[in-house]
Length: 507
Image 1 (cartoon, rainbow, N blue to C red):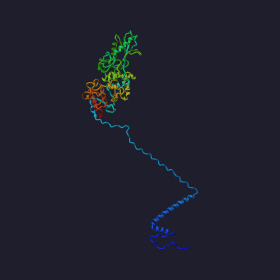
Image 2 (image 1 turned 90 degrees about the horizontal axis):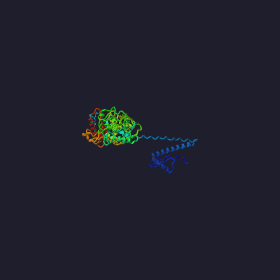
Image 3 (image 1 turned 60 degrees about the vertical axis):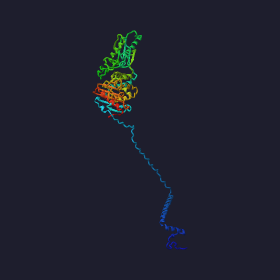
Image 4 (image 1 turned 180 degrees about the vertical axis):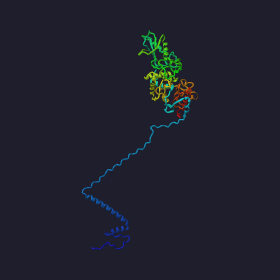
C-alpha cells in the first residue's frame, strides 16, 4: 500500500485552473475547485446559508427526538378565543334644529295712521284693525282693554239673540180669560214693538203686530164661546210680569226717556212707549203699561175697568199676535240704533236661557250666548242690551274677532251684516249728513259699521272693504270728555284704514 501524502501541493496553480481539493476524485472535483476559486465571495455566502439551514434542520430533528422520547405527550397549548373588539357605537350626526312652523316673512307695511290716532278729538283713544282673511292684527292701540262701547254693544246683544233665540223666534202677546166673570187678561210677552196704530198704518217698526188685531180676535172668541157669549167684557187685567223690575237701569241718565231715546223696559207696552209711534226719536212716558192697557180697553168698547195682576194658571186663550222674527228685529235695531228692541232682545235671551228676567241676569245670559262663537269673552261686562250704560265693557279685540265671523256670515250671523249701517247709505246712522263727508267720502259704500254714542264717548265698529280689496274688521273708541266732533275724527281714521288696506302699519 502506498503511505505517501497525496494532498501536498505540487507547485503554483496556473491561472484558470481549479484548485485540487482534498479527497477530490477525478475531473469533477477539479471543476468544482476551480469554480470556487473563481467565485470566492459568493462561495462563502452560499456556504454560510447552507450551514444555517443545516443547523436549523438539526434543531427541528432534535426537537422531534425530544418529544418522541417523553413518557406522555405534552398538552397542547390552550388557544384562547380572542376577545372581540366591540363595534364602536356610531356617533349620530347632529341634526340642525328646524322650526315646527315655517314663519313666512313679515310684510313690510308703510301706510301709517299714527298722526291721525293722536287727534285730540278722539279723547282716550282705543282701536284695533284686523285683516279678516288672515286674522293678522294690522293696527292696535289698547285693543285688549275692556271699555264702554255705547251702542256698538247692540252687536253683541244681536249675536247672543241669534245664538239663544234663533233667527225665527217671535215674541207673543196673549189675551186669556180672567178668573172673574166678564174678565180678560192682556198678557205682555215682551213685544215692545206692538203698535196701537190701526192695522194698515205702519209705526216706526215696519211690520209690527197691531193691538186692534188682538182686540178683534179676543172679542170674537169671547162671543163664540157659549159660556161667555151673552156676557159683556167688563174687566181688563194687565199682566206685565214676564219682565222683572226695575224697569229703568240705575246707570241710565233719566233724560234719555224725555229726550225720546229709551222707554222703561216692561213686557207690556206699545210702540216702544213713544208719544208719536211714527217717529224713531220721540218722548216716552213714565207709565208704558198703563198707556198700552188704556189703548186696548178703548178697542174693546163699552165700560171696561183696567187693573193690574197676573193671568190665572191654565187660563183659556182667546187671542194672540206675534212680533216680527228676531232676524227682522235685529236689522231694525242696528240700522237706526234702536234702544227699545235691543233691550227687548236682551231680556228675552235672559228668560230663554233661564238666567232670570231682570237687568242683573244679562251678564250671565249674554256672555253665555256669545260663547257659542268660540271667542274669548274674558273681561266683557254686560249691564244692559243697548249700550246706554257706562258700566258695559268690551275689548275692541273682541269686536274685531266677532266681525270676522259676521263678515264670513258664519251660522246665521249674516243677519247682523245685513243690518249694519253703511257709510254714504240711503238709511241708517251712517247716512246722516255729518258722517263720512268731504275727503272721507271716498270710503262711502265700503264701511259697514255700528255707530255708538253716549255722554262719555263715541264708537264705531264693523267691516271695511278696503281700497286694495282686503276685508278689514275694526273697532274705534273715542272715550272721555269728547264732543260731537269726535264722530268726524273717527270717520277720518276709518277712511284712512280703508285707503291703507293690508298695507296699514302699526307704527
